[in-house]
Image (cartoon, rainbow, N blue to C red):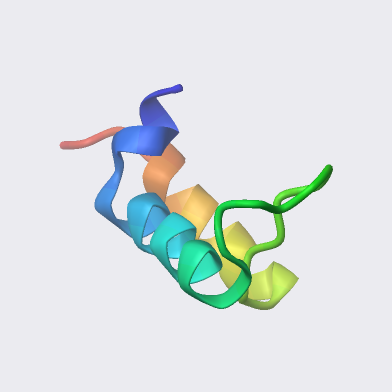
Length: 49
């Protein structure tokens, strides 16, 4: 759940809301490529030094 507080992840959620709205059914659609999503998630998962 900590991922949800990260600025990059919050930006993705904001982009999803802008493109698809709040009334999505089922799967959350995020407007980016799978590769971009993986890069963001990798950055979020890295421990802060």
